[in-house]
Length: 166
Length: 254
Image (cartoon, rainbow over all chains, first blue to last red; front, side, top):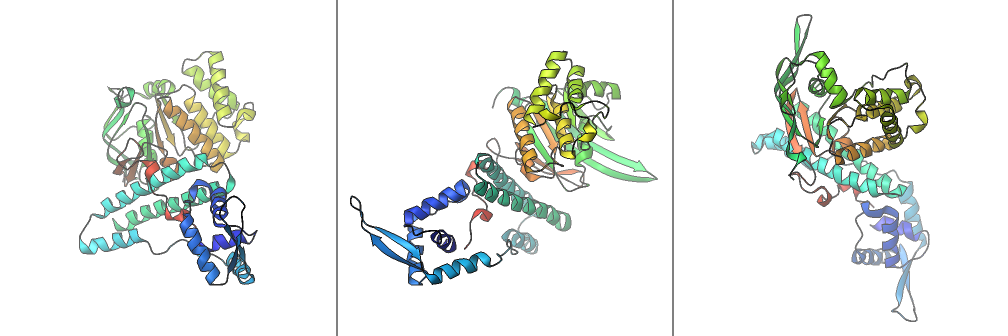
């Protein structure tokens, strides 16, 4: 949550609700709507760490709003974040731990485990497909496509586990 | 669900197929029980060599089983002659081959219309149906082209249009999106979804789980046998798809 908020503030100062609606607008349904409380807590932490500063803007008919803007340190942090290569997908996988260890414990049949996991992935794939069909802008659509490709890889890998272990 | 959806369209029992040559016997399908109701959409997945294509060929009468039975609409069909199977494929079963098998010296339009004419349509009906299918698959501009001048993905969609020309009760498709990019895959999925909504049964072999997840059921084949037969989505036991938590990859980091 921290870095996306800083990145949005690099464009222009904003208050919490504006940041929330910008995130929703850019990423669409695929991105779980951030909770406004979390956004304010994050902004307070960023201010404590000197990455943003804020001031109250007086509004005539409504309560004051607190507008946040990036500090120089914050701007540097955004640049550094954007320039740095990001971690790839996880290498540690909870399912694989279960699969590899359940044989030792004798707690479950492995084909059953794999089948259950495959059903779960396929059901997720189906909900992503439905989401993709309704995504009409490229950013949300690409986010969903990326998730689908990851799932496809998970399913292919499940097949490899079945070939080698069962 | 009551009605057409509950009637059995296709049933295979104890189906086996062993290929032999040079004194070696290779079992490809090793005892498959499978049934498909009218209007049902099922996908077969599995690693290469698991017997997916062979199974589909058996069910479409393109290969003769070594053992077991196949029933179509309550009639046993596994012992039918090649000629009788050909009639079934003209009228009741549409088959999409992995390698298209289009007639090379006919235009795209004629390939699709011929299938409709052989299925009993008149010339006008055949032409209308051809226009409708090629339009939906984004191939209207290629109607007068020879198949050899099309890309692999375009030929694959023509093969699908041909198989659907007669609105067969059963569509069998072997990797129907194997050569397609995302946009073309989406147009094929949309066409399949519409055919499914119109009550056509679909059984397709795919290694693409995006395609498989569009089905009502996913059958996992392994070593020539069914390893899992999983209902998906609303009708199934695997939870309502729309209520599934989104995968962690959708959570943004940072």
